[in-house]
Image (cartoon, rainbow, N blue to C red; front, top):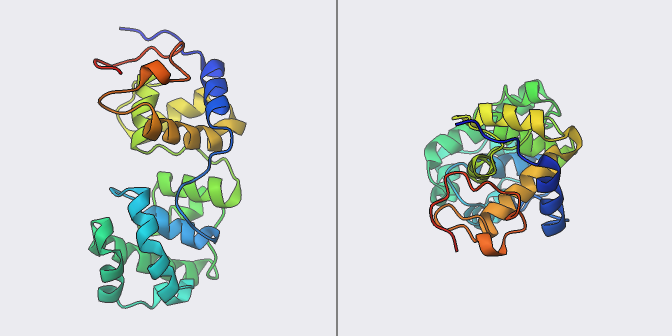
Length: 215
């Protein structure tokens, strides 16, 4: 069945009115901390990451500290975020790459960020958008993926193709805030199993694709 054309302008207006000043919920100071926190957030909640990172950044405050960290020590600090061995390996390797290829600074281009171990487009988009204010693409996490389908903005099956669809529909200047707002909306109103449609700012324009139970 062909989806009707979604009212993008009304969706953007509704999200803007509901969440005018939202930003990334990962606590950080600077691009390096945001990069590491975003890497830790894979298959983990932002709340859990924010519990873990203060001790992590206190022990390893610089890129050189992280690059030279002992893996067992790093693993122990981030254990509760899940997949901690792979995350620790990638964090250490990414920081080694930052020292070797980027003079210890987090790069400002998608191409360069994607050369870092453990960094894919989602992480790179978070860093570029939140740390540097560069709209390189649209962050597609689980909330953005789910709500983009529910709103009729895409039918794509992978985050990469969802991002491509969204980048064609969402104005370039809205890319950064759109993802922040949709993530907040997914966490606070548009739940996976029982979306709160009765109190949703987008209720009038949402086609509710795939929704079977509402509250």
